[in-house]
Amino acid sequence: MNIGLIGFGKTGKAVASVILQNKKFSLKWVLKKNTTLENRIISEYLGIDSDETGKIYSSSSISISELLDAEPVDFIIDFSSSLGIYTYGEEASIRKVKIISAISHYSKKEKEFLKSLSKLTTVFWSPNITLGVNYLLFASKFLKRIAPWVDIEIIEEHFKGKNGVSGTALKIAETLDVEENDINSVRAGGIVGKHEVVFGFPYQTVRLIHESISREAFGSGVVFVAENLKDKEKGLYNFEDILSPHFVIK
Image 1 (cartoon, rainbow, N blue to C red):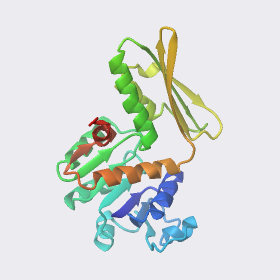
Image 2: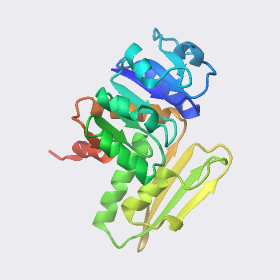
Image 3: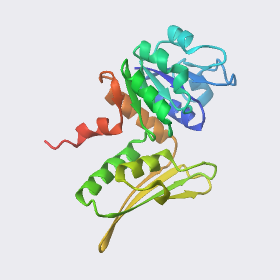
Image 4: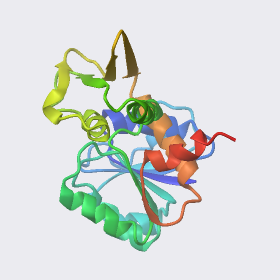
């Protein structure tokens, strides 16, 4: 499967690293805003021993249509910003390129745009694309269904410079019907990301915890999603759509 990656920050670099080391995928290009690193070979820049010759491009030098003409892909992976979808979304949908978005926050406007794109191609969005976090979300939902009266607390921890409540914590709160102002946020040092859901039962407590050790976890999540999405028809998908079939007891 041929991959194009939008965004090349710390997480984008980690995701590119994982994709380059997976023989099922070919990372054809990375598209970023500025011209720094333009035309560098991705694998060489990241110091990865690979035969892949995909390059880094700048959106200020090449349009998405020109890039897709020169280097067509099966998937576009988005780790840029909430507005990044407008850079490539329409062109990707027309060409039936599948979209995997890992953007933490989207406004109502962007969510509606994703829905419109899904009428033409396969679109996936998850505020957190790590498999572990989404398993935690799935398990939490089932526990709440079993005991709807249980007390629930959500704790999220991230690096010191992260602003606002994490999109993952907001998604957990929405799923479990917990108010946003009841989310407990911790900002300290270089924590990559930790989410904890505490279920308070009489005489016992259940804690579900996910901690990202490195940003490569996002790359593993991308690989899992792409493998499960490759045969999906057009439409808008989330992690629950992908995980549900794995929880069918035969």
